[in-house]
Image 1: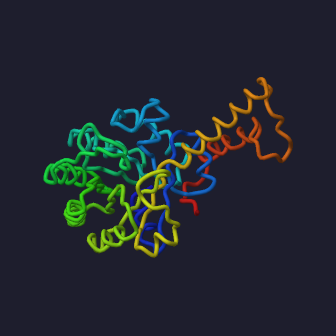
Image 2: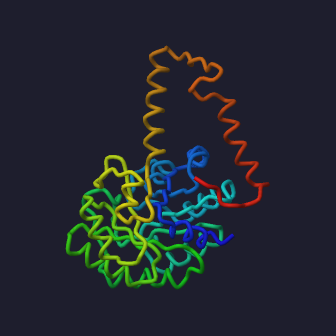
Image 3: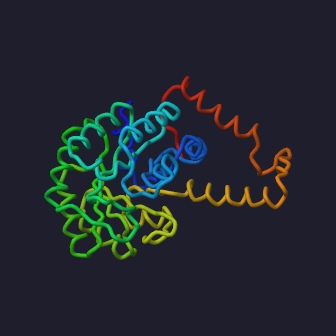
Length: 288
């Protein structure tokens, strides 16, 4: 399948395309029942795979292996992968992009941060000289075949945001992302700066950007919305609550009644069995 082309066709529609951040195969299995697009979040993967914050610790073979497992289980979902700074070296970035495209990723996001990197909504971010990032970005663009490439800047100074957004819009990148946008007014400003290019917006709970609905984002000219951490943070809340209740009940598990909201072994197994059946189905993109 031409996953990049299929994603481009959806992004080209008038409505904002949502991509849901997942952090492991189980969260992806649940998200797949609600949405047809995944965002393989660096924040979520660092938390689930290493138990660490999003500080640039991810090793590219681990991320590629995870993306491969996702594609095997979900052959029809959009899958955009966060590759941070391309794992520092431009040649490594190109190699990773080619590997991801070969296993069926729909797209990647490449940022302009320098080490030590930070979550896009954290303080203390540092960015590469623009010329150095553009050199890396252009090498990545030349190395891809069909893959959607999102050029991301983590600039925070207003004049630098404008300068970098305009420069990224002049490249062959498919989509532009300015991470950590702090207001609706700045979304409008960036939309004007990038012109005809597709625009991405990143929402993360407790982050620096405003919380906006998909219709609101569509009205602002945003083409793609990534939701980095809803699954991860929901799991954190639910696990903490379940274990608190278990402790309060002196270790007695709650009863899972027929039709109850609580998940038991039957409902969990039924969810995971869908991943087996997808291997044998016709690989067609699913609808939201």
